[in-house]
Length: 275
Image 1 (cartoon, helix red, strand yellow):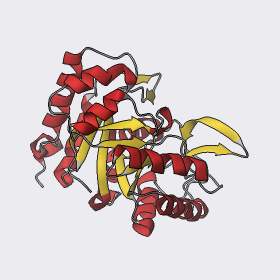
Image 2 (cartoon, one colour):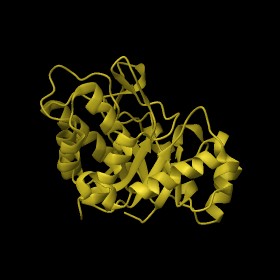
Image 3 (cartoon, helix red, strand yellow):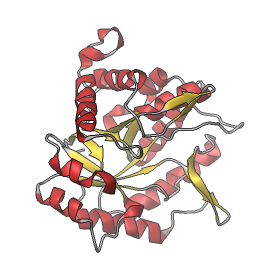
């Protein structure tokens, strides 16, 4: 995977902010929000500067029973070509069934039967894309009753069988530890980090015992701690900050990127673990 550095999720509300920020290694744009034939001027400016732009899909639904929609795959492919992207990312998620949209990135049933379907769907997606694909672990507020595998083991087997890249969202690992009792540290020990494409960090908050992955606040210390733990195990090709609402000042965003950069030092890991 390419060396990306520290990045930020591109949003129209942040376009000028990101253009002015120093040290942005790469950006990620929600693929469904852009027209590859008429790219936003800000993305064209960033590309002209040599900043990599990664299309990030939210609606492919490789976790569903149906094969990936060819039109959605074609859109992802067109975005990658228009942006000259090094890779495309999507979520390991269930988003629709029987023609009905869930309206949310739902966890897939982590069964052996589901695993076979996901592996085939991922292979179909890989064949349709002009660049490598990376899959992201999702945040969840529930798990399916028949789950046979942990989230990390399920994703690891998908990676091992397809060669798909890993987009590890450490904020989502924290979310699922709080909400589902899935150990984030065990996930880091289980995931095949040699396939790591890049990492997500984001803010959220707890309400009545449920962690909400809002992407609308500073990254909390537990999430930065998980980033440090990941970086003690491997050097991630890139780490990206997601901020999707209640946008702060330019100074606050710059401070957040500095906090992310600091957490990437292996010395910041719990217990001072070395590589």
